[in-house]
Length: 224
Image 1: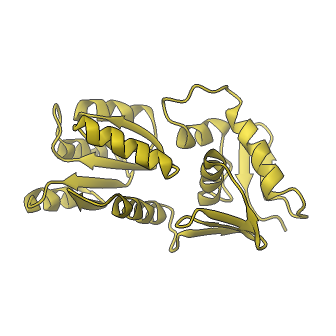
Image 2: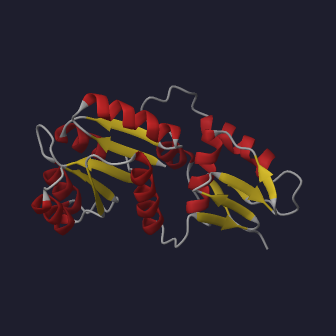
């Protein structure tokens, strides 16, 4: 899942970006509101972590512009301790949640899981399809009780397919939600990872879950 992280304090921004990437997220990060608005125009993100106190354009203004433009991307606000008015204003403007600085990284990730779950209409942190099960908390994946060993990027691609099961996803759509702007791979990277996943998820099973829709992309669904 691809995140936009907007934080003006460079050290905190870099540390949290690396920690989020270590937790399996693809992350674009910037340090001011104007740059954040540019990022939001270029890419559809799965969630935004947005500090309120930003140079150029503050976080509440970024949030207001997003919602006025019809952008429903989940937003988690980062606020200073004691800034109750900012938190209330942010929630009224359409923020989905907030976190008060300083905070524990585990809580940040837990709140992100909740936001992403809500945005996909899910009620659990376990994604399932046709005997395939992914536990987002433990990052364990299994099919029919057999544990599957996935790389971080394989996990990310499969997670996106599971969150959108039954939906035909273009290669570009998958790439945009799994890789960030730092990616320097080839144009067929999605096909490569789909091939890796098929070997681990479908080989040896009668029912094939990952399917190709010619000329359109890929879809994960349980076949009859």
